[in-house]
Length: 78
Image (cartoon, rainbow, N blue to C red; front, top):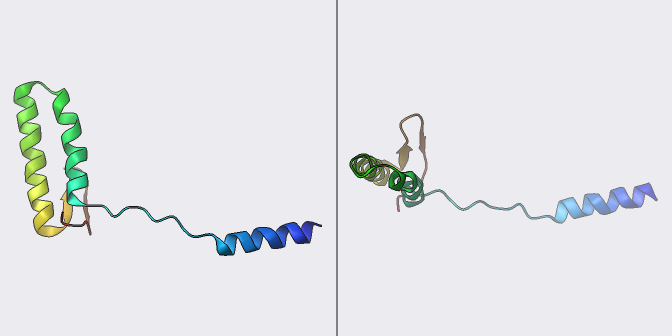
């Protein structure tokens, strides 16, 4: 009986399709960057928005997002 259960589990694992994550893009990273900007006072929010806009422009040119503490590349340039 345990061999049958093992065999069924093995077949189920072989048939399973891996889940694919959505590809990361510059626009997705920009949205994540801009989200906390609205929580700051207006003067700081403008600086935050400007910084996100600069990071987005850099990402569109290079395909790399630099969030200030780390840099990762291979993003879709949209």
